[in-house]
Length: 366
Image 1 (cartoon, rainbow, N blue to C red):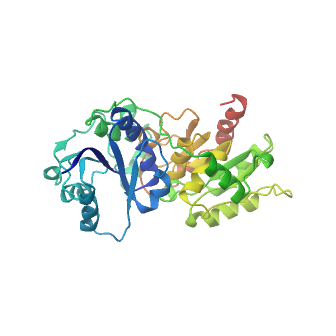
Image 2: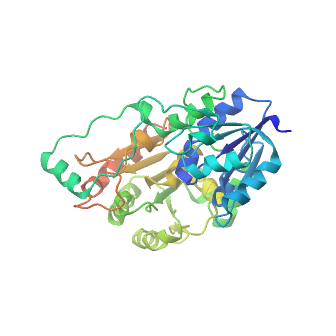
């Protein structure tokens, strides 16, 4: 028989989105303290979830596993209730084939029959529709500012609405992830991120989504040079395997006194190590990407640079130590991977604006 107090949450597939689900998971834990709460997540995100106090168990699946294989494993666990965070048909099928009696989710066309409780989209929800190149050019020619986006449109509210259907509060929280003291010490020793030669300021110049989310490397360099003349710090570069080249370019351009060389960790950290290394930082300057969300969730002060996307939808929502900087453009947000014109939303954002945002953390003791 299914265990009525055993709840499965089918998690999302990308780092930034995963961090934005943490308020809903925390609210669900508060509402159902007696339940066994299990999260199913992609294997690549396992390090993000293990050790989080609001979860009792983390299950993972590999990219090579079929729908049937995942469902068979879930069926053996005999969950009483499941909530589907992603809106895909495959996820609804997984839960149906796993024979979970109560299946909660939203129902885009084609998947309502596989759910037992359908949650209506929240008021003010907005889709991240990509603009066409022609639309971008028309908006630039007209020059009108883009319409305002309501605060209720943020993606955090999507996940809160789903767990609210299970009795949890829908009141938003800042995303939060826990890093243990042991994790911090391990990362400090492994990579030389000791406090005696800091404070450390992180630079995250990449963005897996595409060039339309990447502030130019030259702007990162100028920001670091100007900021370094005003505060005493050391630089650490973050990113994935694909960001090693741009991170190395920036590192080479920064001052490199003996014992105070920039530290390039791009492509060298696991997800758990990245979370701990970001928490070590006294400040992180970053593009809109997964590590931006992770840095804010572990409590690091963050200056988040936005270009083709909308912070009203996917910014570091409610994080008290995060600032968003952006250059207004009539075509933004376009949600495109590559800009069809001149990338004015990012190239037009001057380094001095980012420097001023960074300095506020020192002058205001944020």
